[in-house]
Image (cartoon, rainbow, N blue to C red; front, side):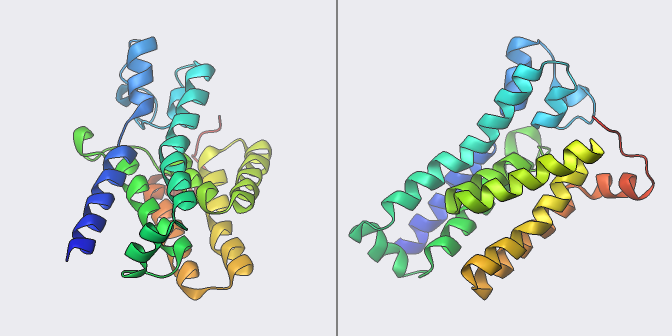
Length: 210
């Protein structure tokens, strides 16, 4: 029972770290604006860019990515330690599977922060941080796909949807593990869920370019 209680606490900590609204904080401090009243009302880097402050948008992107990447990367490096290894082997054997599970709580925190009435961002930067912490090469591939699609269409949401769809394909071809495939598909489904309004606008050809 102790192991599961500690695991539960880790989930809560991941969620709380993920729910730090860097975009909202930065725009309030440096622009004296409430990001929720600008553009789409989203607290992510794309909406920060709509304020016209590219520096704040880039900083938001980096911080939203880092809040999942740094903790998970540290854990990934510590995991081979015998004490940590023995503890988590009681629950789950696959290290990447475990980190992906932790990663979901960072993304959930970002998308549904408790202190903003569960109205947050769409989770792309934070998801990328999770993926980079697991496999830097796959993360860079997804980032490259996002950039290429954006350069062609100038639509952030379309770039996010296409790059997230590529994630299960890349992770399965590299690791060939069904459990990782299922988790990666679940992350893709979650991204589609957070972009459901964007998908409707894309189908109607009403999605705005940046």
